[in-house]
Image 1 (tube, rainbow, N blue to C red):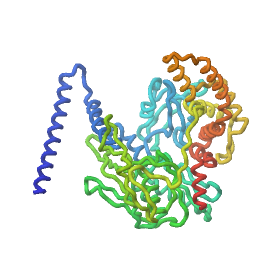
Image 2: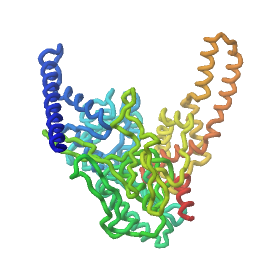
Image 3: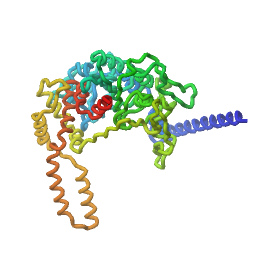
Image 4: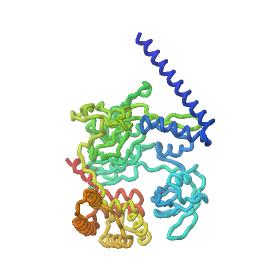
Amino acid sequence: MLVGFAARAQEDRGFEIAKNLEIFSNVYKNLNLNYVDDVDPGKAIKVAIDAMLASLDPYTNYYAASQMEDVKLQLLGQYGGIGSLIMQRGDSIYISEPYKGLPADEAGLRAGDRIVAVDGQSTKGKNTSDVSSAMRGQAGTDVVLRIERDGKEFDRTITRREIKLPNVPYYGYVQGDYGYIKLDEFTNDAAKHVREAFVSLKKEKPTMKGVILDLRGNGGGLMNEAVDIVNIWVPKGTLVVETKGKVASKNMKSYTRMAPEDTEIPVAVLIDGSSASASEIVSGSLQDLDRAVIVGQRSFGKGLVQNILPMAYNSQMKVTVSKYYIPSGRCIQAIDYSHRDENGRAVKVPDSLKTAFKTKGGRTVYDGFGIEPDVEVEPEYMSNLGMALVQKMLVFDYATQFRKTHKEIAPAAEFEITDEIYDDFCRYLKEQKLEYSTATEHVIKQLREVAEQEKYDIEQQLKQMETLLTAEKEGDLVKHRTEVCELLKAEILLRYYYDQGRIEGALKSDKSVLRAVEEMKK
């Protein structure tokens, strides 16, 4: 009886699918025949597909053949191009960061260069996506960039290469004997590069007392790479993650499959609110196995697994096929996309449905809201001054100017913003006539509006407050000097030592790194 019921349900579902596909086909045919203007079939169908997939979750996506370079970058960390980040300012496009040793860098392009044209096509009024697409292409082909620097224009012919972004941009030592490895993405060979970095650190200092794996800002990637990274510090044959979905063939258990490098050395993993997916598999499984101390802020909470499915005409789909569960048995997915609120937004898993699990050593952990760190470090928020300096590109422009007048600086680990540099930056800000608003100013503005509506005469008091606030703001460059120096230092180091230098230069004052070392010393 139950078998017959299941067969009938499947038959009904098949009829519903066929019926709605026919309805959709008829809708488009009628549009094509009767709509007042021509309808672009590719664009219309792409919009329909995207809207359908958006009703499911943000990770199920359709990619047309023209988007394959973006897919390669997302999954493999590689693409055909010149190897540079770009940014938009007004209606112009600028080089923001050429990657070390890649075609843009080898061609002499610098941060702050304005891209006037790509292959003769003006970039004026175009966005970064348009210009990025124009610069990407098959490895071995040429692209001609017209560049403006210091008011002069010149052309650079650059041969595109297969650009492979480094998933480990930096590794080294902090606080003397503690190793540090920064992992940006879980792309192909991520585990190999993390393992090589760890082995290199141990070879450099056999007395290494601990290692920090930094997964902050790492949005994830390939699950097998996450399993192999855990394997560096746990024995062969250890369960790391299990996936469960609707299709039985997609369900699997992933165990470590190689001999570990070190099962005794203290390990700390740094996470934050942008650490997701594969980052949570690594941090969560090491936490469940009581193999590492997790330091930072609660992670994002993405416990969903996607597969890439090939489609007709060289297109592809990325589809959520299962959820993953780490060794304690918990799933850390924080948002329930199968339920929506009255505004159509997916809801978070309620506290009442969160379940307690036990780590290997008996500690209590919970599912349903990401990875909770063992040691929480309060996040640092940028001041209004800092945000203004970044948003108005004043730090960026000063660093560009600094690079032109300073041929070299101290090594990244030693470079600091001196009084002389800071005073020069303050003079630069005066020349630029920096203006920015604070939350207090916003409140005073609101209070003035409300007082006028309610006919209260407090204008004199409000003006006195504004005068006092103006005087206080003049001291912001003194009050927030430490923060501003860190912003300046990072941008200047990028000009000389690329991303590796920026990371290395920040380690001395990184609160999460320092706290991780403290915990490993215990």
